[in-house]
Length: 172
Image: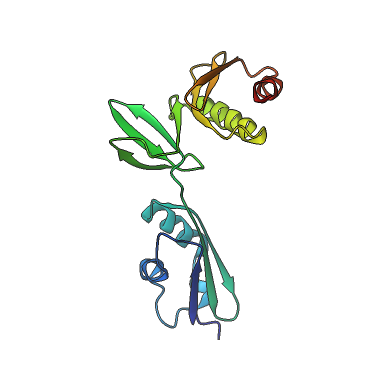
């Protein structure tokens, strides 16, 4: 009773169901109650860099559902003539010798959580206002926020004070 018989994997276009199930290595005749779904999800994200999210649920009486979200190369930083590539949720993916196409340059210290949060807020507001051709976001300190549109126009916002209004005016 309540023995894992099926593991369904869906959502990833990068990794196969076999790769995922082989890594999870759920023993034959394992009880559903012994499967630690949180730990498995955490291990999947650690092992497979290009997974952004892993959600594992138990469907009683005998099915484990694995729903995956692939990472998309969305941002990059530059240091020591090397590019660090990040996903849509700012998760580090890899180093590269050139930036991927259609990614946004983040001109900030990714280790500084305050600057990263300011960048996230700025990007969210830019997207909310349909500014889709942003090519660079800079956060040097709390008084120096800027974004570059289409590699042509630099928008200096200064502080976050009335930032939404400033972005609306720039979008018009």
